[in-house]
Length: 305
Picture 1 (cartoon, one colour):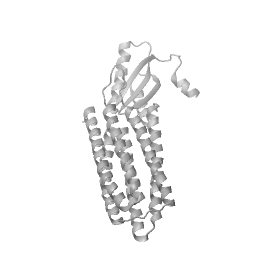
Picture 2 (cartoon, one colour; picture 1 turned 90 degrees about the vertical axis):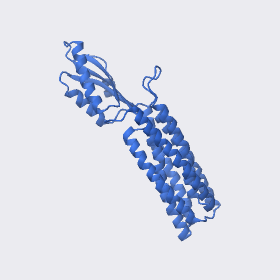
Picture 3 (tube, rainbow, N blue to C red; picture 1 turned 135 degrees about the vertical axis):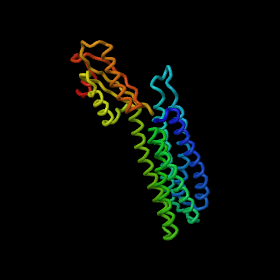
Picture 4 (spheres, rainbow, N blue to C red; picture 1 turned 45 degrees about the horizontal axis):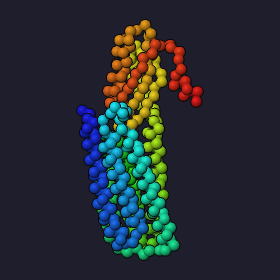
């Protein structure tokens, strides 16, 4: 039995609460560790943690806003709030990375001694284990709800897993080989990786905001269903878009021009019901045309391009 929209919303909201709680806890213990050790790699992880708190708060607001019901003035809903939040989160990631890069260059010029590496290693191992648990839960929520905001939020913590692991390696190297420059290199590499992930996140959010089509597999399935209904002689001008958890599609179906409106409407409903049964998050608008009608079509414009 499929979960209701309210259950999806509650699950997403709970995921954001877990995310914020963990971010606050980890930031607090990393702040202590960074102060006691002087490690730039721990400090870079701390700065990323502060960014996670802000990003998770943005996600929580976006999730609540995007799940608002349709209104008179917003008949397509508020789903794109999640994509907007992803752009904001990307900006925070880039800002965090810039701070780390600046501090890394500064420390090359003015070296800082790293102390209490054992404490730093212990803190980062705890952070790593807790972050892994959160990401596993977020992946479940994303799989169930298809939330862009949770996906964007989860990306921060996937990066945290990599950065926490690299920080642990860095501290081990500093502790046993006394290569303090390795700590700076690790922090700079984390910053570069953060910028790369922010770029990927930005592109994905922009695709939704600019109404990119659903993937080819989904569109091919919709076309196959349409073609499987006896009495539908053709189709044209199929176009789709995504807004948060909602999918929207429009299509013109072609029928024998001698059939009554009642008959063509019944056939349209048959196709629509089959499509919605597979994609319940899809809202489909169908226009009925007589087969063989010559007219200007979106398909012609796209093909001409």
